[in-house]
Length: 305
View 1 (cartoon, rainbow, N blue to C red):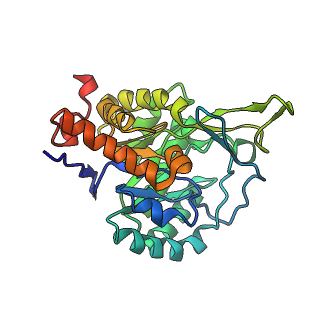
View 2 (cartoon, rainbow, N blue to C red; view 1 turned 60 degrees about the horizontal axis):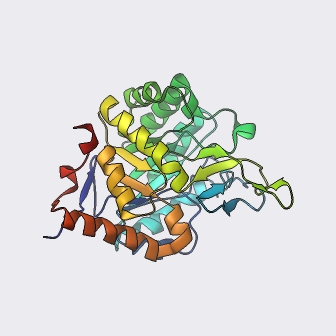
């Protein structure tokens, strides 16, 4: 028996549940897309070109990565033709394009969403929760129900495309915020963004990142993301993209058992490239075959039963 990994993410059909999460993917992006993933998420794009934080911006501390890229991007106007070309190349590999966007105000979310729609991505991710630019842009939208809902509604007004809202892990009222963005028009929810943290080089006595603090990702984040997916599965009636620390096939299975429809991953791709993504997919396939699971629907949310 060959398990069917086809995944229905709202109105978007994926060839597998694995989704390359938002990150500054470079020239290797097409190679990564040839690994069997279902979708690829772009680096977050804002209203204007933005230079991120000075190097170093990404550091592998062993149990995961810490990053403070600082929303470095080319701006939405330049990104539209780039995304059109990228979507065509991904389509040849059966991979969907998710365009991630950010903004400083609800009005800007509306503007960026309206412009990015011209690239016709398969789905738009509304990044309300970037944790490493708070000093410049203020508290993330994802930390307050009203702010999160206003940004979501502004983007929704501009979009007819499916829309996922990316939430933060470091909030005390996750369910209330999720309910607010769903009410404001979110079709899906992505959990979670990275967790703010710091790593210090004990030889120099200085933080390893130029920004000092950054977002923690990798295996250390996975139990937090699994908990968020589990809680939201019972609270909101929209598909969830569980993202955080998925390094092996068993991690992806765990996320789906918690209630995720799609499974985001990035650290494994940064560390191991295409081979790492293929390994996760093969491990999933092997586990499902060994346990005689024909479709992912059979195990989705099983932890709640």
